[in-house]
View: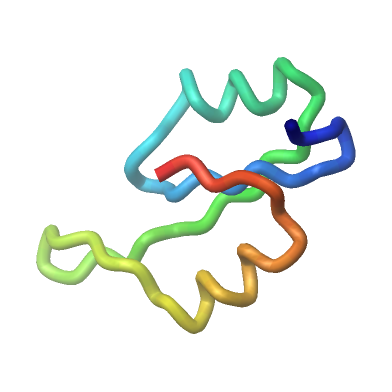
Length: 61
């Protein structure tokens, strides 16, 4: 179970307000990881993702 100081990572542009608000409303640290938009196809930049996920307890896909 994540504690208040723990980060919860959300992949944007997929999840917006309901998930982000839930993280913030529960006193957790919101960490947004943006997806790469290439010709309207969203993909993960795995090098960036690996750096951003470090130290976070949960990721919402």
